[in-house]
Length: 258
Image (tube, rainbow, N blue to C red):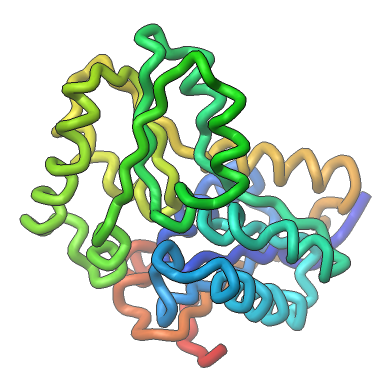
């Protein structure tokens, strides 16, 4: 089965490039269009209604590019808006949620930590998920300030180290053995997080699972790109310098109002 249109991916900023990277690695022949709504980042401090409006705006941008599938590469947008997106638009959506299930299944202490935005942790979808695991203690921590620092290119700043220490130390003291990263921006912090966490604490993010789900959906229903070109284009509605830095200046990045 063939479908040579692009996979559309959007996030509240540059963080979803961690999801794009996992998809691109698994499906290198697919065309992809990535949308960074950095002007409105972070979504995690917005109301559900605001998140839905922004998610619809992003979806319509990608549909105007004839995308065959849309990946909502933002935990906050998924947990607050994906039901509305699926009801309104006639295109398949793949969302991203904190990977709580594998952490719960493998935890030996039955205590796991979840680092996420306020918008994700307070969402109905997240709370429905955590209710399934009554036998595991789930320590929730809002990552206030982390997305803003990443978006401004301050991943390795003293401010970032200070924030991460304040968020992670209580989880370590509570005896977690898994840390779930509940925001697509956070994988860019893994080197610093590893420097703080003891070696026995495992870190889980959702990138690989989303990539496999994308592959499955293309295989079963939508179809793969059969053309010889697999171009990737990135769009951002703010200064593109941080996005280019994250991508290593390897891809086409366009600044565009949307």
